[in-house]
Image (cartoon, rainbow, N blue to C red):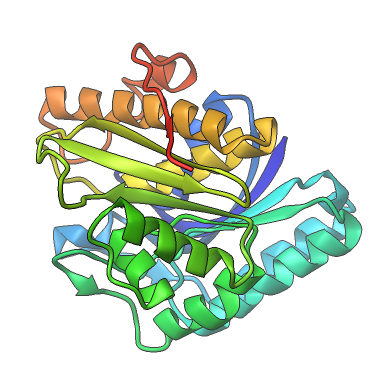
Length: 283
């Protein structure tokens, strides 16, 4: 399996490609990382150095891969945070190029825009681009609850409203919707859920809510779910495998009291998690 991953990167810590590439490699996936920014650290620290790479430069790297004559090997394209809409167009064009050569290729879009309690944290125009251009072109989308509500224009308060919102997004084009963090009324405050929906079925899985707040977990989640879905074709299998691996990394991180997700110490658990979580069919 080979995935073209077009995302940000950092030297210190793990977000974007720095959170997605190693977990994918650890489960045996070939990754072609194309970086859109290269910062010293993620922006959550409040200070960072580095640069946003020119959109033309990102396009050139993708063109160079195409010129190697290897795009037919690419099974899927993965994207995350987009600095501006022009980069989004480069990503969509990259998927079109791959799809032209490999009609079976698919696109996973992590529509990074904002979060509950923080609101939008991307540039103006990005939410609209995600809603109107990226999501309709995607095979899989992996919004958090805040992003799901925006994309569906529907408030999520319980499982029923979450399913309505996921179905609304799916009707725009994607075959699969993964809601990466779901807190709903009636659920215990000590648990957090993920929800996966496709054309026929919907599954939910819950884990203990760990005492930490870190960046990069969503990037890792989208990457692992994409790979496991590509390998199995099953949202249930992909959801269970992803949940187990992500929980293992976050539990290791919480136990270490670390600010960055602990990918290296938890690497064996990414491939062979110690805990299993059963996804419950809800439709």
